[in-house]
Length: 308
Image: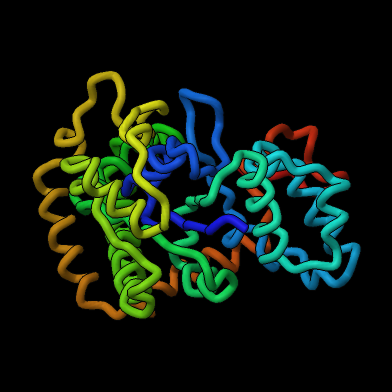
């Protein structure tokens, strides 16, 4: 079996960039789109794990298989319905492991990687499920993440709210709280699993790409390969068309970010995690998002229409 490696970190922290650098190694694989797009997120442990009940029930397993065969990630991983059926009886953890190990074997890889930012707050569970897994966690400076998130959300989801001061006020508070929660979660997970977790920063990786990638290779057990230094995939940036990060927030908003950072930094991780726990429980009771699926016509028969 190949070694599992999970890339952890908040959205906009550089998880995609790091994942794309790693999958350029000939002995490391992951689920990727063809260039110029790159590594995909599975959302497996945040959206699918446990959703369909006990998989010892064949009907529950058939429902999971139908969804897997309709999803972007698992289609790119090359799953086929009959092969998935052949795995039963099985568990959620063993299904994912079998899919990724099969992918690695087909590509002659020693390591497979997966990166879904939300898996950061599932890391304790994933570590228990896969005792041989390693974790590479990436952090990024808060004052770089906030403008990136504001631009991403206002461009992709809320274009009519981009200049709404009330909306911006609320989003800045939410982003800073989430950044703090992710940072505290990574620190606690790394402290509890010092031999299985490597923590780095986006800024350090960009400044010293080769030595940092060499250290990651040593950590996950493969020799460094210079192909990892390439830029085969386009940057997953919020800033295109000449827009500058430093122009997104007003001076007052930048001061607010710093105040909120100090405030949330004083809060215990459990309190900060309450919102994430509620969000996860809502996700388990809602239809899967449309972006999870390759095409609407591949949705499971009779399933509710996915939400945007």
